[in-house]
Image 1 (cartoon, rainbow, N blue to C red):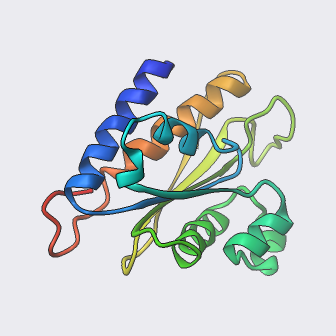
Image 2 (cartoon, helix red, strand yellow; image 1 turned 180 degrees about the vertical axis):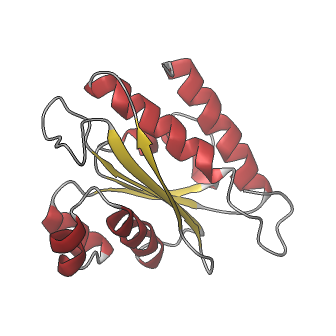
Length: 171
């Protein structure tokens, strides 16, 4: 289980990569409720590489703030690859950032189903001008544990984005 120290270390490493490659980060968060942005802004100097964070818990917020299509939510639900990809793309459209991460999931203890049990989380990452990448995770534990693991997965995946031409480091 990622501790506060583990999350701070991940955010610090992510920030160093983003700063070195001259990228700014935006977060679009549902199930984490702003925890990724909080973890990032706990790092001194994060204003060099963090643009903004959007907490979009309801369907309406996802639509209004990120441009997630009602049809996507009706057909696939909030916790889906399709919604995560529209969230991450919308975060870039509605910010000055060049790198985005979006999360949507079921942290529990309720809200799960047979198809989407508690602990199901979709995370998407995108570099401005690139293609979105999304992954589904099935985390164990209580609400806090699911959210902590989501923050760690979201930050960890930023470092796996392919480097754009002109980058001095892979962000």
